[in-house]
Image 1 (cartoon, rainbow, N blue to C red):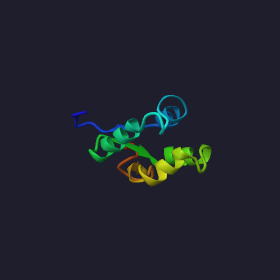
Image 2 (cartoon, rainbow, N blue to C red):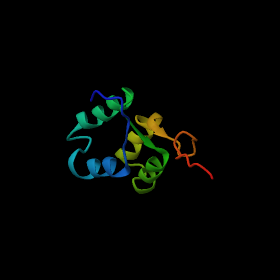
Image 3 (cartoon, rainbow, N blue to C red):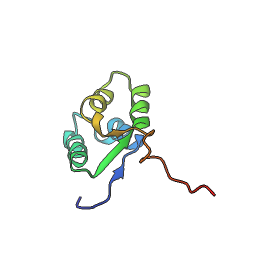
Image 4 (tube, rainbow, N blue to C red):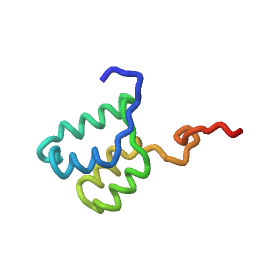
Length: 89
C-alpha cells in the first residue's frame, strides 16, 4: 500500500474479521498486516471503535489485541484535527 492517504478502519473490519474469516489462530498474518499498515501510517481507527470492541468483546482475544497491540492507533475523536471544520456565517 503505497499512498499518501490514511484510511480509517471501522468496527466492522475488526469484529467481522475476528468472528468470521481471519481469527487469530487461522490468519495471524492478517492481524500482523493491520499492525504493519498502522506502523507505516496507512491506517488508523478511532476511540469509539475501541470502546465498541471493549463493550461487545470483553476480555476476549480481540479486545486484548486491540488494547495491547493496536491501542496507539485509536485516535481520540475529541481532537480538533479529527472533527470536521464548519464555516460559521
